[in-house]
View (cartoon, helix red, strand yellow):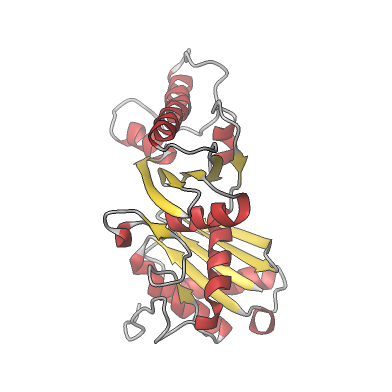
Length: 276
């Protein structure tokens, strides 16, 4: 079994794979204030709850992160529990992708993991929309060439901005209202946030499709916490895969497992001399 860890700005999503099958998945809050010991106990508790013999049955671990200050904590926590070095995703790993991007090292690893998984699981060309802390759209060509994409404020950022930056708008739960025209403040906010996000995504997809000319229509894959909800609001045929990033981590691990983790590999290794 392989454990995959996707460290995001809002949540940390973990998965345990066996033979490319996602057996377990967990989500918990991402906090730079939590210590290595706290994260180690979180992993230990999850393994115990699901009766996973982690010392004998987990053969490897891989961490993909967009929060660099958490890398060392999770690396050390998993190193202690598994007694083996996790791989931390970096641009030095074998991706089997061509990056047509001005500054490839600036691309979020989650975006590359998404297009890698789209390529391996659904075929090319592909458009991936990830409804995470930010809403990102990325495209990969038939020649496995990552062509770039867009980054916009995520759905929760939009909701929280309304409630924190205004005097009279409340914090709300997000449910799709039956009509675009809201008849009260809460339904108006829900409509603006959710239908507005759908309209933004639709426009960007249509614009990207016009700029990206191909003989085949790109597969459209939606992922992230709001993928299921947003698929009902978009006028396109799409594939919903809420755990695309975890699957990308598993694929990348299998492509690079000969490297192992720790010092001297082709991934990256945090400075373990620091303490938390």
